[in-house]
Structure formats: structure tokens, C-alpha cells
Amino acid sequence: MTTGMTRHVALALAIGLGNAAAQSVDVPPDAVIRLERTSCYGSCPIYTVTIDARGIVTYEGKRHVRVVGRRTAQAAPSVIAELLAHAERIGFFDFRDAYRGIENPDGSVTTVTDLPTRIVTITANGRTKRVEDYVGAPDSMAEFERDIDEAAGTRRWMIDQSLPPSIR
Image (cartoon, rainbow, N blue to C red; front, side):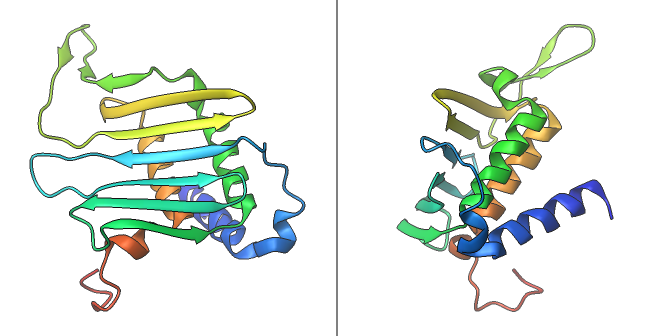
């Protein structure tokens, strides 16, 4: 199994474990993970999703999403524990506050326009870190952003579930 696949299987298992596993997971009471996706020049989905220490998922759809407005759901606290562990593994708290250009080997910076920005904010154990990812962030950041969406089940509010799977 590939590392990515192993990670996704572990995350899916954590989501499915429910309350029994949640009781054995140590999640800081102040833990909050938030992912915001902003506009682009085209029709990029614009929304915010937050998962708190109790596993409460709050989604706020703004534009270019199937569900506009606020929705809530529940995830096992083990899901947020896995996301916090993932953040530690990739060194999230050591990332720069913003990635807005591509740094070239010669020291110059390439700018890009019309992309959406992804903003991840994590609070845990009394510390908060906010990272803006427009372009040029480490690859692990994009993977982490996808994992937040997967853990929150954001897809349920993004894509019309009545469509055949081949179109979704």
C-alpha cells in the first residue's frame, strides 16, 4: 500500500470508529482546525470548514458550491486527533505564515495570478498557527488541505450526490 493510500485508509477508519474510539483519544479541549478556500478568477468553490475538539464539523458555503449556507455534522474526535498528528508530522507550526509566490533556485520569485487561496488555521494546546497557501507552499500542505476536507466530509456539500459517480 502506498503511503498516501495508507494515510487515507487510517483516516477513513478513524472516521468510522465512532464514539467508542473517541473516548480513548486525547484531543486538546481547545483544538480547532479550519480550512478556508477563497475565490479565483473562475468558478472555484468558496467555503470554510471547521472541525473542533468534540468533532463538530461546521461548513459555510459561499459560492460555486452545491450547498450555500451553514451546515453541521459530527466526526469522531479521533479524526481531529489524526489531523493534529498529521500537522505535527509535516511541521505545520514551522511553516511560513504565507506562500504567495514560487521561489526559484536562483533566488527570484515567480508570481502567479487568479488562483484560489487556501487558508488553514490550527489551534491546539494554547497555540494558533495560520498559513495562507496561494502558491509555492510545500507539497505536504496541499495534501493536508485535502485531508481536512476528507475528514470533514466536505464533499457532501460540494457535489450533487444524485449525479452518477462517473460524473461526480
